[in-house]
Amino acid sequence: MTALATMAALGACSAAAPRETAVPQAEYLVFYAGGQQRAAQTAVQRAGGSTRSNDGKLGYLTATGARDGFEERVGADRAVVGVTQDRRIGYATARPTGAFPDAQSFTKNTGEPLAGRQWDMRMIGADRAHAKAPGTKQVLVGVIDTGVDGKHPDLAPNFNRELSRNFVTDRPEDENGETLDGPCEADGCKDPVDVDDDGHGTHVASTIASPINGVGIAGVAPGVQILNLRAGQDSGFFFLKPSLDALTYAADIGVDVVNMSYFVDPWLFNCPNNASDTKKQQLEQQAVITGMQRALDYARQKGVTLISALGNGSTDLGHPKTDKLSPGYPKGDEKVRQVDNSCLNVPAESRGVISVSAVGPSGRKAVYSDYGLEQTDVAAPGGDVLDGQGTKAVRSILAAAPERVLRASGRIDGSGEPKGPDVVKDCENGTCSYYQYLEGTSMASPHAAGVAAILVSRFGKPGKGGVELAPATTEDLLYKTATQKACPSPRQYVYKAFGQNETHVCEGEQSRNGFYGHGIVDAWKAATVEP
Image 1 (cartoon, rainbow, N blue to C red):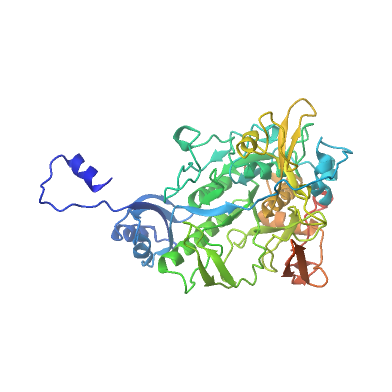
Image 2 (image 1 turned 90 degrees about the vertical axis):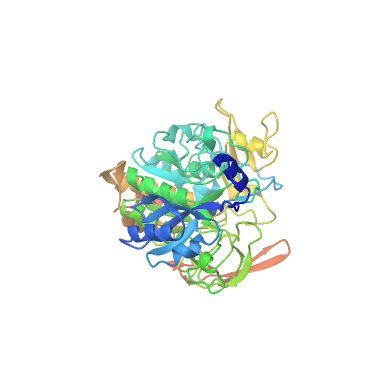
């Protein structure tokens, strides 16, 4: 409320009285040390703010305070270990393939109508595993993403609408008045649980569990259930609190596997004590690191196997040097700062998370994929349009796409026909559905999540939500069944594209290295391995 509006609301006011200007307010997440809830509430009050709620499971307060100076004031208290505005922290890690020239043809042998296009499933043996171990409906896989199109013909049979949740409210504009999600399409700016206005989450969900139903494609684990645990905005951005809420909910209802195909922002690297950052910026990064780790720990302790995309920065996360892109929000705040291995890519480098790098059709690490000896746990098909001569969209990953998203983005015409080879329409069995080629570690991660779901289906015991398998056991089996792949020779691998060279150095041995981790996930081995 402006000062003028405040005066009008009060009715009469002396002309000689000094005007009071309303202080711009913001919402904050205040993380406190163990047992320090009351002290943190007192710190919020002393800083001129007010506490709105307390999350005792993860140890943080939601509070309202002045937009300027509140974080520094409340963060000075020893009871507080991190504080940040409730704003964007991440962005989905997919790369549109674009309409690249493509003369490749496909021959369908067996399986779903578009199975011939799924080089990724053949690479990891999922096409053979479908008959042996498709997964069971007792296994719940949560997709923390931009949403899931639960009405898509190639997802609806495996979509659990009852347990799905939307933890975000669309924001038409950002804090600077620039368009963020655009006009609201639902009452209260909160989309139904079966809607995905971005398409990213639908693609991920389809890779995990599109059913064997004579339509389009089949996912890695076509027999399991998919839950939409939406934490991403229509625009693809992620905020901290919805991410925390999604992980907590997944833990409480007995979700078995969670896929997180997004990377943290506004900081490319979250550094707890970087000397070039202000105190406010340090507190923000400490809050992201602390908050996400607590939520991940809570979920893992409750039996959730956590799987994350590694990231698309072409960066050795074990040896980061310079960050030129942070903070990436609001736009224009970027600065150059020196970083080291104490700075984390969250959630990929968070404890207890299985992080996945991406490979192309030839099996080489994709040029865009992040890597690192300590960071890469496994690899999986993520696509790489540059993996071969020229560029071809079909070297990416094909999975379900919401029709209205394709229409809105101009990828299909008025009659519903694709405008390029990056989009495929399937009407073979009377029901038309759409699919899109995307590449990224976002596309690699759900392959690993699908294999994990197969393992839980096979070895899980009756428990909350259906069956359960300790995350540590699932992780061990995932590594045990992965196909080991050694570093290239020489280890200094040179990517060549568009007249430029880029060199990535692979560290480690065949059993564990920075490009492929423990190896490329293998659905067939997961379907046949003995405990």
